[in-house]
Image (cartoon, rainbow, N blue to C red; front, side):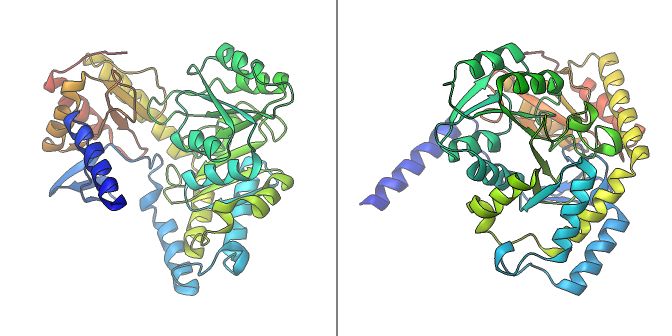
Length: 394
């Protein structure tokens, strides 16, 4: 009987999602190192990838991955504590620590796992977590996983964050949580002001640098480095490797005490097979290339400026983002159709709709890379302009 109840529940939920026109469907999608994607038998220029520096196809990094795989095999074979912690993991941890100015690091298989693992080890029931309303789902779920009291402040509104922090019990451990670059809007956190607020309120600042590491700051060291935050002003730092580093996985960086707490108390870290050593070796090479990638960052900045200039000239309505993530807002009825038409014209730009973004904020999410050419960017803008659907819903 319980099986039938579950089946009916799932059927009803999926039917409701389908009736709203929001049911997600998975299609095979094959990106290549030349910056194209093959989806449903169509090859198109990829404007969806978070591979901001184009490192996914970097020959040095691919060579390092192949070298390490030949030496160490495919997988780590065990969790970190039971024989899976490899010298290649140590090399990657050390490289990340040197890059970000933190003394210790713990590696995870994904950013979502890192958020759950960090909160699970460091926060407790009764803690107050005050998070930006647009922070990534993994940060919100991490707070819930730890049993903390979660409150969300108005996006990038420091006064709103202050009010929520002040509303907590005087003996509660307080957390202030934000992304540095927001994944759907592309704008940057008011990080200096938020850091000052955390210090004033006695809160621990946890920063997700997923879309900033490799792109912003000296040597691509992230927004924390760009605004001069150290381990005292930003005690818990989260990085992911699947964006500008062109790899996969994530890390939490902080004090030795923070990382030892993860090793001892983080169930998502303790009970998961370690990252493949070959992937760790390749990611170490990615860090090296990214740190020395000022030319790539300059090219990315030029591409962002070019896209925004051309888009404004074409009458497209953009968000406020100055980063590689460039949302273009459309009416709900148009956004999927426009994405489909772009695919037919040779451009892969995904539509983003609720529940990923709020209703009324549907958009195309254009993601720019250093290895996009000016010709490709101009062609995309021309295609968007020719479609003739421009609707600012913000």
